[in-house]
Length: 208
Image (tube, rainbow, N blue to C red; front, side):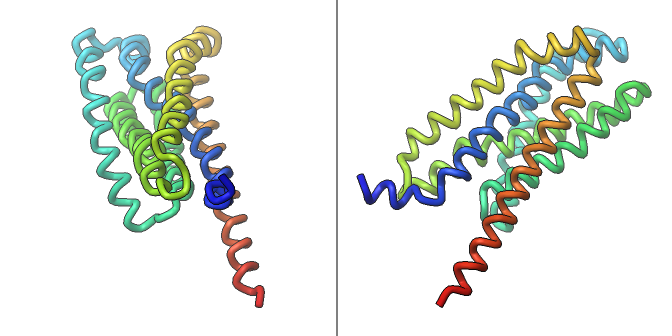
């Protein structure tokens, strides 16, 4: 209807950005859960039980991502801005992994993996829960959550099949360079959106 179209005005760009964020987020989050045990075994020669423990611990750590996202939401109201901030933090810790992975400092690497998992879980919560519920008056929340969840599954599928293939060709560091680049790209897209939105809002306020 025309009323629905009017309500959707101004939402298309943030929805498209969140859809892209959903792919990057789950590519990173599920990529860690799937491949970190193997990475640690191949890089540091850690025993199998450590890998099994990590496979269990990373999803548990991810639960805290929801708490982080809810806490930040009180200060950062815009969902794209909030996601972009979490991507910036993730990019930082991925860069720590890139630096520490070849050096054998596995304690810092492990800690960084846990924090990245937590941050990416926070992004996931923003995309699949917070945004659809908040925009329910403007767009069908069930449909939007379904579309964004579909993008999440796309990211998960890419992580399962794509990251291992990249590692076979260029090693695990190349995987983390890719994840770092995608997180930085997501953050930059968020910054462009925020800057453009603020400029547009200022222009609207100046109009008589």
